[in-house]
Image 1 (cartoon, helix red, strand yellow):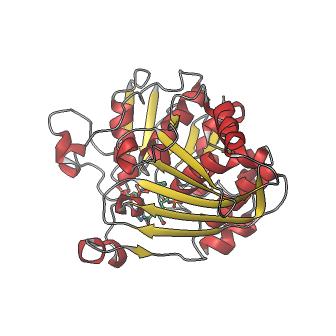
Image 2 (image 1 turned 90 degrees about the horizontal axis):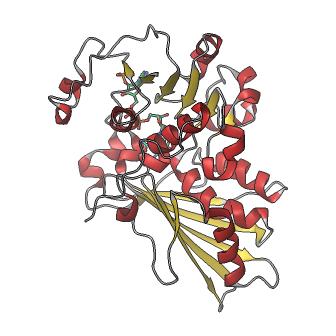
Length: 341
Ligand SMILES: NC(=O)C1=CN([C@@H]2O[C@H](COP(=O)(O)OP(=O)(O)OC[C@H]3O[C@@H](n4cnc5c(N)ncnc54)[C@H](OP(=O)(O)O)[C@@H]3O)[C@@H](O)[C@H]2O)C=CC1
Ligand SMILES: CC(=O)N[C@@H](CCC(=O)OP(=O)(O)O)C(=O)O
C-alpha cells in the first residue's frame, strides 16, 4: 500500500513517519512538503540518519491509498475533494472536518470553511466511540488532542445519563509539542520553561468540538467550561474533569459504565482505584489512562485522563483510523507501550 503525509516535517507528521515506517502494510511512503521539497528527510530530522526514510516531495500528490494531512487548519479542506475524486482516502489531523457546522467552524476558527459541502461525508475518528462508522470510510476527521482525552472520559457516562449536563468543568494541561514545531512567542523556551500558564480561557477552539460530541452523547445541547494550560514539558496531556452525578449514582455505577465500554479496548486503560494517571504512562504510545473518584463530600465526580498529545491525540489515533478504514488489524503499527521513566 502507498501512503502519504502532507506536513511530514511537522511534529505530528514526524510521528506519522515513525509509526508508518514500521507498519507492515505500508510499502511506500510519500513525504510531502511545501517548504523543503527536495531535501532528504534525514537532513530535516537527523535522528533518522541512515534509515533511508526518503526525499521530501513537492505537493503534486501521486496516486496512493491513504493520505494523512498534518497541516494547519484550512489547508486540508481546500484540496480534499480532488483527493477523494482520485480514490485517495483522507485522514485530516487538523480541524477542518471535525465540526458538523460550517458556521460554528467559521465562528471559532475565524476563516471561511473551504469545503463545507464535504462536512456531511466526514466521520469523527475516535475509534473507541465510533468504530463502526469509521470502518471503510474515505474522509476521517482525526479529533483534537484535548477532545480525545475529554471524550474518552465523558462520552460513555453521558450516554448512560450518569452525569448532570449543566456542570462540566474540564481543566486540561498540555506539553508544548501540542503547539507544533513552528516558533511562536507563547511557546519558546524562555516563555514556557519553569512557567505554567492558562491560555485560550473561555475561548479555545476545542470547546465547540468537545461540546458537539458531548451533546451528541447526552442527546441534548450542553456547554462546558474548558481551560487548557501549557506546562513546561515536551509531550503529554493530562485532563482533570469535575462533574455532578445524576441522582442516586454511585462510584461503582461510573466504573462499571467505563468497564462496559472499554473492557475489550487495547488502548484504553482503567487504572485500579487509587492509582492516578501520569503523563509518562502514555508518553510515546497510543495508550490512554483513566481514573475517577466520587467525592462524597461534594457529590462531584473527579476524573483524570492522560494521553500523549502526539500519539493518541494525533498521529497514533490517525494510524488507528487508517487501519479501520482499510480493514487492517486496528493496532497494526501501534503496539509500543510508553517509555519509562
Ligand atoms: N501537535 C499536536 O500535538 C497536535 C496537532 N494536531 C494538528 O495537526 C496538524 C499539524 O500539527 P503539528 O504537526 O503540530 O504542526 P507543525 O507546525 O509542527 O507542522 C505543520 C506542517 O505543516 C506544513 N505546512 C504547510 N503549509 C503550511 C503553512 N502555510 N504554514 C505552516 N505550516 C505549513 C509544514 O510543513 P512543510 O513546510 O514541510 O510543508 C509544517 O511542518 C495541525 O492541524 C494541528 O492542529 C492535532 C492534534 C495534536
Ligand atoms: C499546547 C497547544 O498549543 N496545543 C494546541 C492543540 C493541538 C491540537 O490538537 O490542535 P488542533 O485542534 O488544531 O488539531 C492548541 O491549544 O492549539
